[in-house]
Image 1 (cartoon, rainbow, N blue to C red):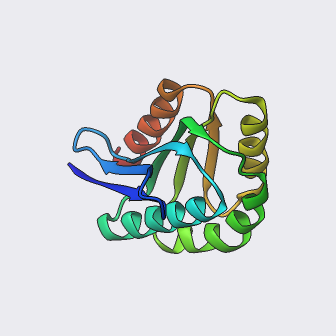
Image 2 (image 1 turned 90 degrees about the vertical axis):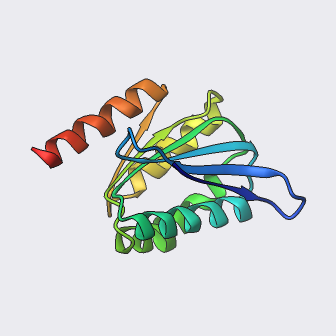
Length: 140
């Protein structure tokens, strides 16, 4: 399994990116407090990882992360999303954090990102099922 940790300038882990052999997707677990800079660093690394291992599926899990992404959504829509599609990303399942403002931010981003398939979920299981169905259709 390929796996690496992303750290903020203070040395704290804010994301763990991995690719397990038994799943067809890249799994990103966001942890701790996430700010604009760490989101940018994280999504750019996701794009690099997607390109390097040629994987079109990403599962982004924010269940245990804190922080509001509203202020970064414009950058994600206009700067990152076009680059993400160039890196090979086609499907992103996003598991929302349980806080209402975080869910609103995720839903706002989902409505903005039109360059690839972006879908928000309340549970990890639902996100995994969605990606698994898409991956199985691609193979058959």
